[in-house]
Image 1: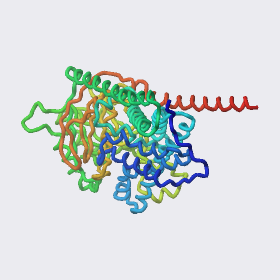
Image 2: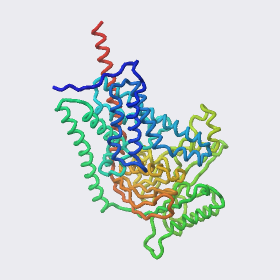
Image 3: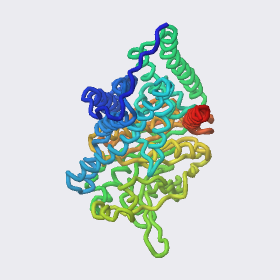
Image 4: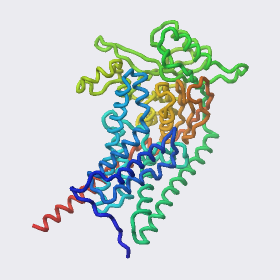
Length: 530
């Protein structure tokens, strides 16, 4: 019988700097970059962790931590590089400060990858194979990254698969974390197959697992796709028009361009010439499409209300809003829903704000931040994710960044929303990878809840994402135009919408049970030796 050959872990005095291991960790970071849009392809994710796992051979937990941080830091620089462009061009920070901000965020996010690698080494030294420990640790830490502090789930590993519809259908059971779990599981099994010597029976079991588990997931996905494609033929529907104004960020708030902006959206919203039956039931404009405070009754307000009346359509658009609390002005990033008679039928105030974009966290603990972000005020937080009523239908509004948070869409689904609208202004991102990454994450909100999602972006990418996650016709970056789409109502609950991130909770429970077990064994061993 062939015994598994695992290199012995190096002791505390071993070198922390192993150039070959760090090159491998760097390689994993580069492969992770190439797993995401716009430069990468999702298939790369299925082998992206192999170099890091190989680099952990014979290492102790501290070395594992440093190698994991190296891989994560490299990956996040490549994925998040666009932050420098945003804070320099629109935050008016010096270029070195912009680079430093991006590097600090990347370093923080890489801590989770470092903990993953360190804990993986810890579990391996206690006899737990990578294919068991790696996916469990990954999803727990990925969830932690998505929740702790302000929460930042930007391009979690599962999002890399947004174009592979059979793979991502499992998200209606396990969310995006289920897809992450699967990817890490395959990486770990491949590592065990190629780089760990085992007996033939064990190797055969791993070959079966690496083939059977993804095959079962894809089989489930194909079944779900066929089921929904059949359901759409009889599902009730609603016609909608998405207006992409492509308003330049530099003039967006200039009072001299306000009427020009409204005129542009009015033109995009009008029925097509000689198409009397082409009247949309709902018109959607992007985040802050209204270049002033819509709640103020003035000529701009009357123009937009008149547009809804002349189109005889519901109209949803973004606008800043305000109120006074204790004599102080409080601003909101809001969405207004107008009825076909031009009256305000509903309003949603953004709940999950962008840190250092819409509010400054920890301002009182770090006073120097005020000097760096002097132009940023703290926006107010909305009362919650409560659907708006559109005649006999209910819709959920996700403003910009909220589209990347699964819990926001879940709250809407559980509150009775029958479709979602994500309004955003991605002009801040320019032609970087960020608009493509932003779109990739919104896809999962449709699959997790089996709801169609309208995405209306100022400069793109606007699209309809159906309940299977399929991206339909779309308007690309920096195009002005409109899309006429049809939203379908499936009336279906999903396991994920009902139970949430049960996979993550089970994984966390498994870790706690494992730690308790090894401690009980250790204390029992100490007791016997006394």
